Length: 98
Image (tube, rainbow, N blue to C red; front, side):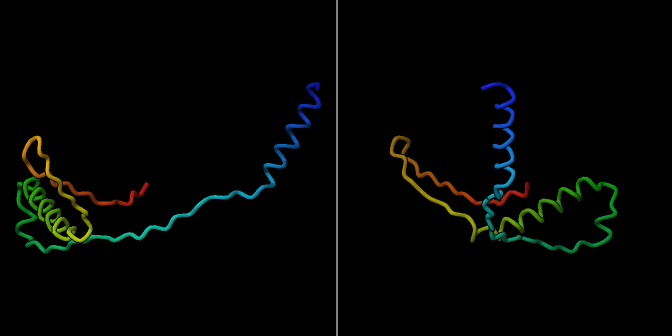
């Protein structure tokens, strides 16, 4: 087969691929959004040491969200006889927004 015949063959294959419909799988995920709302006095927010106040606010909001995670966490226990202790481990599924 010479170069011209090969070019025609690959052109036909290319055109056949262009005519094929593109198939892809769409997955729908249920997403639960955990929210937290807090009210802080203006005097606290306008303090000079704003980085310390910001840290307190972030920890407060994070703790509130963590307290609402209990129904989403799957945890398991197992006994480890070689160290004579119980091992507790948990997991939570998170939908990534990439």
